[in-house]
Amino acid sequence: MSEEPVDVLIIGAGASGAAMSWSLADTRMHIVCLEQGGLMNPLTYPSTSRDWETRAQGEFAINPNQRNLPTDYPINEDESPIKIANFNGVGGGTVLYAGHYPRFHPSDFKVKSLDGIAEDWPISYDDLAPFYGENDRMTGVAGLAGDPAYPQDNAHRLPPLPLGKSGQILAKGYNKLGWHWWPSDTAIITEDYDGRAKCINLGACGSGCAQGAKGSADVTYWPHALRAGVELRTHCRVREVTIGKDGMATGAVYYDGNGDEQVIKSHIVVMASNGVGTPRLLLNSKSPQFPDGLANSSGLVGKNLMFHPYASIQGVFNELTDGFAGPHKAIRSQQFYETDPSRDFVRGYTMEIQRGMPPVRTAHTGMRLGRIPWGDDHHSAFRRLYNHVTGMVAVCEDLPEEHNRVTLDPHLKDGNGIPAPKINYTLSDNSRKMLDHGVARATEILEAAGATDVMSEAPISWGGWHLMGTARMGLDPAKSVVNEWGRSHDVKNLFIIDGSVFVTSAGVNPTSTIQALALYIADQMKSRLTNLFD
Image 1 (spheres, rainbow, N blue to C red):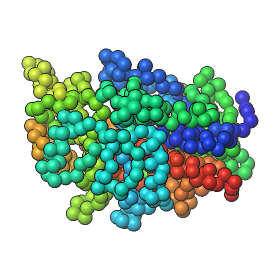
Image 2 (image 1 turned 90 degrees about the horizontal axis):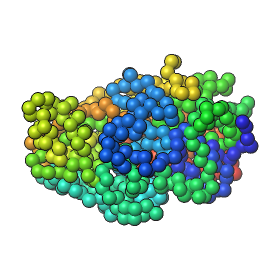
Image 3 (image 1 turned 60 degrees about the horizontal axis):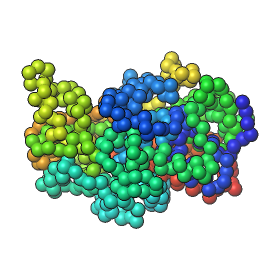
Image 4 (image 1 turned 60 degrees about the vertical axis):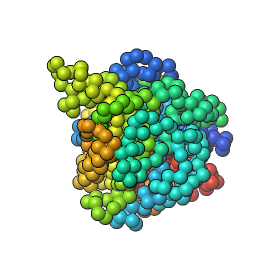
């Protein structure tokens, strides 16, 4: 089926696609968003049932190969020590994220100028600052102004999340060492906000917030975008972006929920399919004009994949902690965020404090790390851990390297026969040193706070939540895929707005910056509507 061209086609209804859909709606253009997953029903989230930990490892698992739902596409990740975490559905990865919502630092946009590595972004923190603020207002962010690690801002914040027992225990460790910590900016509302009820500490944030307190894009941006007239089509899997004889994007070919091939025409095409899905689709969109993949004259589509290697460091305490009750991230530390010449690596990391683990995860982790044996001591060892563990993760900045990449697998395909992505990723020496440093410093904090035992993993093998860099932005078409406002250097009516465009990864979770970038690019588009194709 073909139809009259729409004005804007957005591919992906996750964090970035939702934000741009809402922002562009005030232009009154005909905007269509295609999403290969479905609308979310909070009544189906794992936390609504007693077996929620089991279900969180099934249909709500963070890894698509583990979920293996009809809406997922398989990923060949055999050649990566870090496995992919994503979600296909309205809201995208925000459905399963923890809601940690920090901004980048000003230094993150000028790494080459400051440290002589990677590349500088073609935009600055100041360029994004108003869009960070707009995004915070739309999402609902709990936090506390005045963090000395950041520039001062006038962002609208709800009261911070309570520290809880875990936060109080670890804050004592930081205070004893004289190291920075601060209540986290978190996309979890602590007061009723925008028609959503405040958090009641269900504690299963990472498998979908049944209450709607967590700021996933399906409950923040999408209700407003739909009321404003944006058309959202679910269960639509895009095969390729189509190109006209003039080299301009003309729309897309996709499969609907019945598996039937459809064609949609559009004057503007926007990619919002995450740092793996976007390069996969661009590489699959070959044509005589673009034999190596769409918008790939630089040869960089799919290259420079960045993950954020994670270290997990957990302490066992004699006193009771919160267990898993409450949001995961109460406080953060950026004591080791900026480059320090006295260390043997460049850039740095954020420590994100985590509450304890629920019962099944406590047992699994304890057995895997040798703290819970089989036999007579099995149950008593479990009791020593359950509600007695708290700690942190170190979110390490990953540097862009071309050999870390997304390509098309020659054999693996999804349910519609579209080639699946293949991941090639190697942990760099810089990341390895950073992980080791994070484990050592976190161990000091836990011991200062009174931990009797410390357990660590680095990197977390299943921690590929953050997918960045595979279609980077820049001023030079030979060294980047899109320009400073997200437009393809090669195809003037093609835009990319997800984490693919990141030039560097920073040392914090990227969702806040992804959505601020989407709002920034939407604003640039609106300011250029009369000459968008020049």
